[in-house]
Amino acid sequence: MAVDTPIPKTKNAAGATATPTPRKVVRPSSVTLKITMAVSGILLVLFLFVHMAGNLKIFLGATSFDHYAHWLRSIGSPLLPDTWYLWIQRAVLTVAVLAHIYTAAVLTVRAKKARPVKYAHRPKVQGSYAARTMRWGGVIVLLFVIYHILDLTTGNLNPNGDKAHPYANVVADFAPERWYVTLFYTLAIVAVGFHLAHGIFSAARTLGQQTMKGQRRAKYIAIALSLVLVVGYLSVPFAVLTGLVD
Image (cartoon, rainbow, N blue to C red; front, side, top):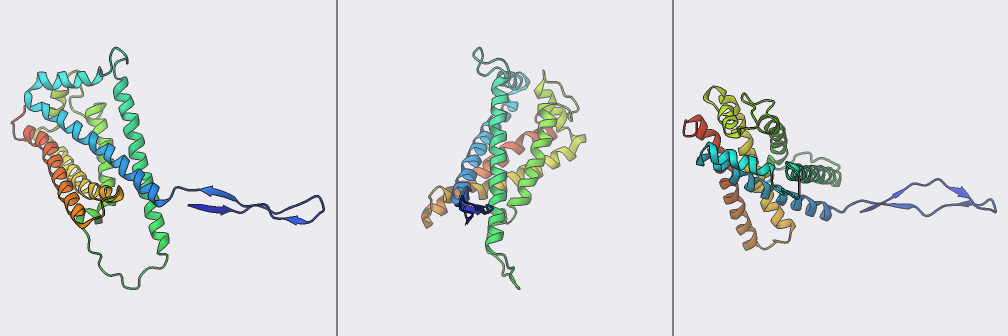
């Protein structure tokens, strides 16, 4: 999309007023923004599933889980110094998150501008619960990510906060007396599930899946993946809460 930028009129050598050719400000089209949102979302989803698989190693015991956590810091060695891979990963994920938020905000603003006059009586829009809660769900997820980093990555909010013993940090974090942490974690993961269910379906449509049969398949896949993710992530805090992991 391009818009004209006003340019002051000038005079030529003969003294006549000349109007220069307006400069064009190139803005990404809505299609480009939707593709960017879909691709960044897919990248984040892939990370969520890989991260979930790593979290589930806690059921193999403290030795296995701690070894996995320490191994993450040494990925790429000796080519890369310790923790460099993690910082590269964090940088890529940060760019993906910012791109996802930016494209969502721009598309929302454009949608509102496309309908400048509000309906006198707006009819109910048929849509899934996940679609109607994408915005506030995204805010909850963002706040959770910030808390999660301060809790289990930097250890600032963790009662144990010992980087040498990640297993002990998780157990201390979801101890029964800290039920409110488990509650917040549950709400955030459920929000992620709703966000993911609608996001995967929308991404499939953006990337070309338009047939009714294909959309039904995409919907079922989105729901299934979301359920797997929610159950996988919530299994850890509830295992600690019930004493299965201690």
